[in-house]
Amino acid sequence: MKKVSYRIVSYDPQKIGLKSITQKAIADFLQIVGLKLSPETIECEGKEELVLEWDQLGLWQNDDMGFRSRMRAIYDKAFPEQEDGTMYKVFLVTSIDIGRIVGLSDGDIAIASSFRVNNNLDIVTTATFHELGHTHGIPDEKRKCIGNYEKSNINDVKIVALEHKHKGKNAIFCKLGEHCLNTSCSMRQRLSFDNWKEHLTKERLPGKPYCDNCLANLKKFKYTLDYNEIH
Image (cartoon, rainbow, N blue to C red; front, side):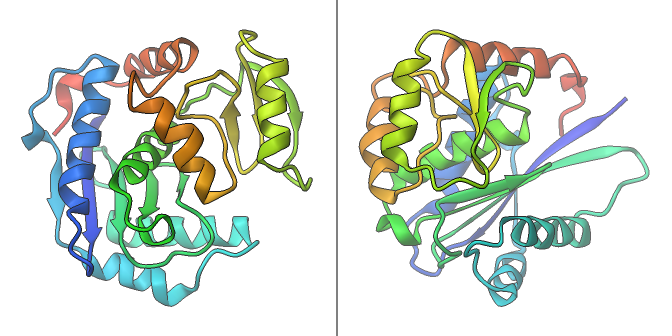
């Protein structure tokens, strides 16, 4: 029987309150999935050296796979496999620069930075929902994929056009991982920092962070683990 432990690693030299807003976002996320858990379920670790080590390894530029492999190495070092089978979901959040991205995830670890979005905490919350979604398997790769754009020069204008074209079709596309094409969903992809604010965050704030299709994918994930054992 698997146990799941959610850990937040915060390194916030600008002191803008990243740990508390990330705690709230993860607590909200767990409730969205249908888990009535208290905030104490989420343990905050004082492992700031993890983010510092990340910084020393170099910023993400166009080396997506190399960046992800470094992230996995940090995860494996800090949270080795436990004898009791505990699975750690680790979220690194920081106000230092991690490169030309707001956030990134791989497997059970994710990171978000406020640096390049002018410490906008609403955008960091959106990034938290986005990366948490990825670490919990959404959008489901079994949904209709309209194309793989990993090696193309696709931009936000083209992504928005895809969203309009495939509206209501439960479709996904691939660019830096699988992303949703449903409107008003935090699992959509945006490549510019401005559009993380103007599109994803402004549309998230009035309602829920996920579309019905991604939420259904999350509910499916819920039953793959025994959440009575979450620590």
